[in-house]
Image (cartoon, rainbow, N blue to C red; front, side):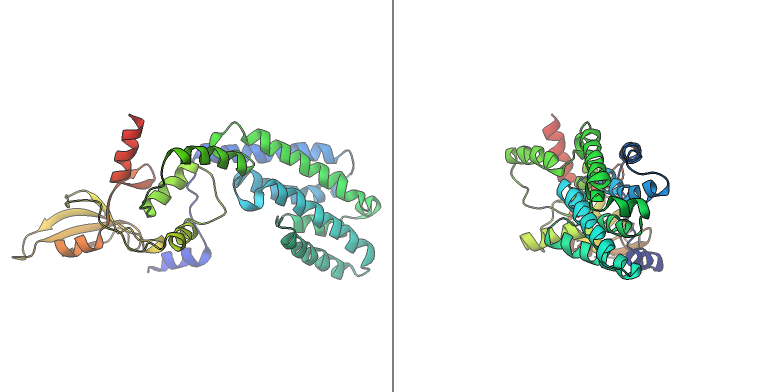
Length: 321
């Protein structure tokens, strides 16, 4: 594995395979949600305290508008996570005299409570700690802090998320709205028997939304469910200039393009290939035709920024017609 690939793997860097339109929608949604929250919060608080409280909502905006289908972004984690964290934060501020201990205890208890209530929402930690360090105005609010501004802010950003995301069919919020439509379509078609790396990559690109689960994790989940580790070839012959995939999972997945045949080795035709995706990308190699057949599982084609199996392309073309 090259040093660059090793660094990317250890750092958790994964390119976001989403369109410019999706990125602009996320940006505009976060702007709208926070703007309305700031306007509402100013009715209850003044000065720097307003911005301290809105800070946790800024983190929620990232989830609701950049990862609208994520598990941590759904309505119950949003509402429950902020409210239980606010309640715990106010309690710690009232009953724990040491400020440092109160801050740490507020966040720790909030995390535990969110676990047990099945409403983990990372910005809830900021809501809890703000209740402790928010200053005199927050202290004077007491438990009212839970309702105004926290609950009110949560309802505002939840409303914006539902309304703002609704016109975009690929990013309905909450995720149940998107899932119900997808399930109805799925009933009309039987699940394919053989789903490989290219199928996952193409499906993720069509969702056009950043999911809080990696492509590799999805492949591993599928593998655990189906227990399918082997697959047969989906092509009959090798063609110069065409692309072929090994059908592997995650970082083992690779695509090669056949450049030419080398006939210098009598009795054993050698072919020259170039690696165009996966480990050792851009390198070339030579192997026998039999070795290439043993390695390859699918013929694939380039579709914008993704790879798709040739048989999948044929199926889609037939559906469109």
